[in-house]
Length: 84
View 1: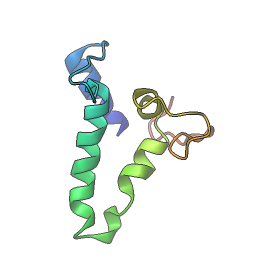
View 2: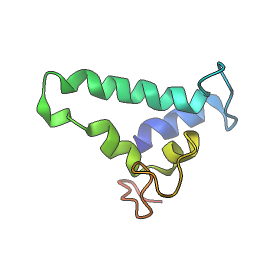
View 3: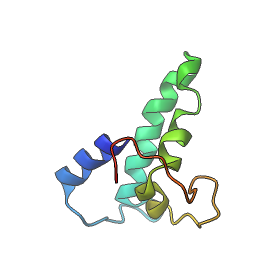
């Protein structure tokens, strides 16, 4: 998730656009990424829950969706794969 998000940011610039009344550009990035992950889960249990595991440890997800500090998908101790 970190690598994909970094590449996405580099391709679009730092500003998050409101693309509709419902979703921002950042939210649609995460929705699309998770949709791709979930497409595998019906066929292979190895991917089950992969999206939640990836985003719950990724601060930009919590920021994009304005998650509270108590939210399940926004733990205070995050495990990063590639570092800070």
